[in-house]
Amino acid sequence: MKKYLVFFVSLLASHFLVAQDLESVKKEVAKKMLQKEIPAPDFELKNLEGKSVKLSDFKGKVVVLDFWATWCGPCVASFPGMKKAADKYKNDANVVFLFIATNEEPRNRTERLKRFIEKKKYDFNVLIDDNDAVAGKFGVMGIPMKFVVNPQGNIMFYSEGFNGSTDATALEVEAMIELAKSKK
Image: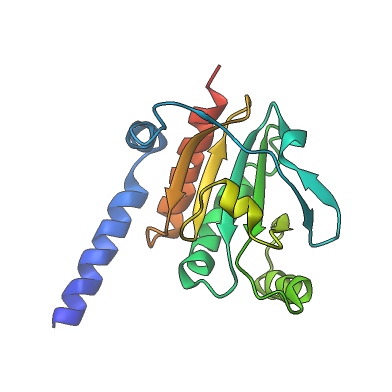
């Protein structure tokens, strides 16, 4: 009985989060906005195709950085919500998602990451943080950890962990993006 009650309460809480509209979520998320924007540290990493990607190449755009690892259960659980958010903005040239694989075993890392992404059928732009230096620059202490960088190149938001809901994750990321887009 207790098991069913816990399931029902979590289902109800998940439904409440999903039932919220974007405007109410934006109000909640705005409270999490950094009081003082911090310039995002520039970096250059290779993606799974071996191309170099620099954060500074996206100046003038909103950039969502998602630090994750294949062995991290909450990271993998958050991916459907992140995919939903990324899909919403796939035709918006002013929004970029970068998925930074960090703290991965170095042996066969690229091949493992490719297999993981292909198996899950994600079309994420995955960057490889070989020595975890970029995670260090951003002060990543735990994963998953997301940062939203505004068009001026400043970190406006960061979010740690996974809230347990695909829809709530997508809505929260959307709210952060919309607030960052409106920043002049």
